[in-house]
Amino acid sequence: EALHKLNAAMHSATSAGFGEVGLASVSSCSIDFGKFDSSAAALLDWTMLERWCEMFLGSRVSTEIQMSHYLACAAAGTTGSSAAHVGILDRQCDAFAICEQAVAQVESLHPCVIHTENLCGDKRICLPPRYLFLILMELLHNSAKATSQVAGASRQDLEARPIRVAVCANDKQIVIRVSDRAGGMTQLETDQ
Image (cartoon, rainbow, N blue to C red; front, side):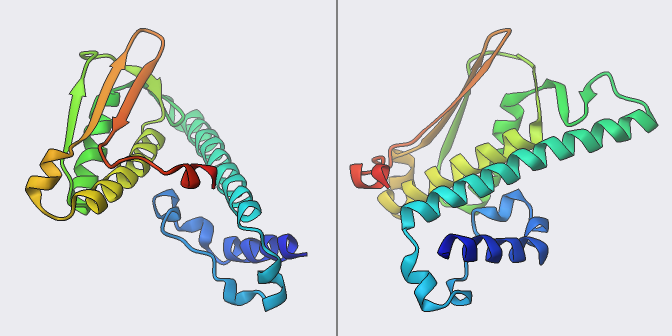
């Protein structure tokens, strides 16, 4: 019953415009448990809730990617398609340039030091740049937040714990590594 009420509340939030907030804001959204009666809130198992939220948001991201791609392809059918783009896919996406954009955005939002390294030169790969940017923003945001909690606000302490972003690729795949020196998660946090 609690899961049914949670589904209904999330459906109401979606109908009320939650879906229009955009993916960049999803991480800052919270669920208002004030809409549940106390018996429903008491029945919620946090593990179950977390799994449900991951499924809900994951399916929304997948659906949004598919719908965006479909709409872009349909629009290209009426206006002509570009040789460089197919739907939302950029056939010559510069992943390192996307990384640098995400780094600039995160550095403007958080006290942090981020070093980037391009190990592959000018490799281009076919992928949706918007979603690569959003994924990198989320990873870098989490890393910057954790680093600033460990290092404090001192620029010297932040420079001693830089976040590193390395990009490498071959003709078939690209690898982007984001690493920090914030200490990682405890076993309890990973179990949750």
